[in-house]
Image: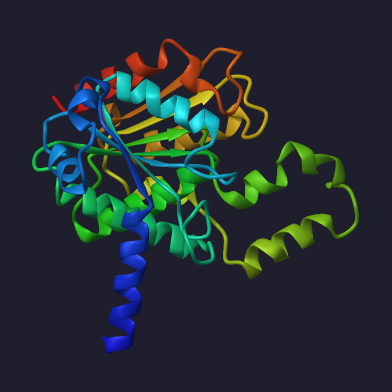
Length: 271
């Protein structure tokens, strides 16, 4: 690698890590007051499980529904590392599928290097599920599978999700509409193939989906679970939990059952 390339990689790496938001378990909130970066890094190996949170396509890591989820997880004893991918929030650059995937892998590997024996879980929501399975596949190919993966409101792949997006359905019968959508996705090289990625994974996989999700309908989550369950050798490593109406696409964090569902699954898998 040439010096200029090394400098570019280093600048990108520091940008990603700089834009991490680390929320400690609420039980350590008092300890964290006034502490600097070195304390937070050291805290990652305190034995409390860690979640790397990969958000969806809208806004940034500080969107209200994301902050509510982080609070729920923090109160449940988790470290939560939230990142704005390149081109999101206060991160620089232009978002691409390869770029978002590289950002997620960077954050996961950075976290694992500091977590000791503490397990680290990738959690993706909506578009973030595509980033999560892309990153998990990369980690699998490197020989270091993710400790666990949680997919919240996942789609099968971005092509199918885009064609079936509720606001676009009324245009589907227009001449050339589907071709225009496909050409646009093809041009930007966007696939996020959850349905293909899960066939190559071995990590514990939990899929959670709201019954009344209108943005990414439940049928996509069910289809992805079916594909993953058929592909996994160890069927006990794959689980799907469907939440009753009332939480739609962004509000599973309001369910009193969410934390129990997550902790129960992870404790069984990490026992």
